[in-house]
Length: 211
Image 1 (cartoon, helix red, strand yellow):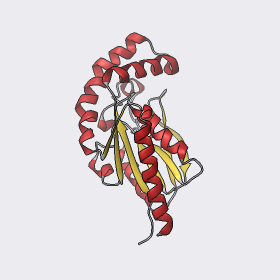
Image 2 (tube, rainbow, N blue to C red):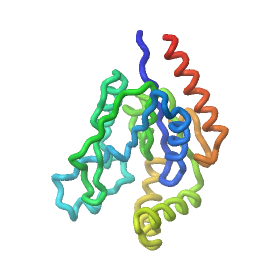
Image 3 (cartoon, rainbow, N blue to C red):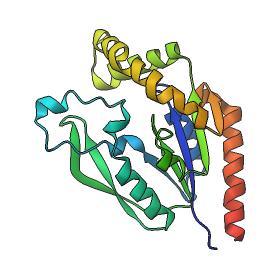
Image 4 (tube, rainbow, N blue to C red):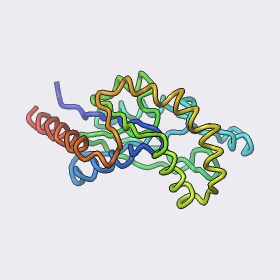
């Protein structure tokens, strides 16, 4: 049996620090055979809907994601086949016509708020991580990001958090913690947990090199 890539799933709420964890692991292995696959790129195509309807999309709900395409792409990467990763246009609230060519690697880090929600995705993962950060820290991080990077007002961020983000987190994201092999408190600040993951990945890569 030949070697196959390992898939690491990194989940957690918005502002939990899962992207920081993913980036820390990725940066450590930069130059090695590793790639990041963000679930955010796999929001469903909505070009068939009027623009006004697209504005009502709940991006924190499992049904917002095209997991069927994501699973198909992961399976292609597991066979060492390249994929055309979709690009999402947040201004038009639908999938762009552009795609990104992604070459297969030995380590695939799949990152997103709901990557542990779908059993089909979980079954493709070798290691499942959940980044667990207190709600007050997550809302502060989200607020700072949305105001600074997306030009949002404090009122609009709070309204969205209370009406959509918080209930979706409690209903769909937080419960996926039970599927995690490892729970990482405080995200990118948890250097011990990140070091442990790096060591684990190194071990698997070394074993793959021997096989």
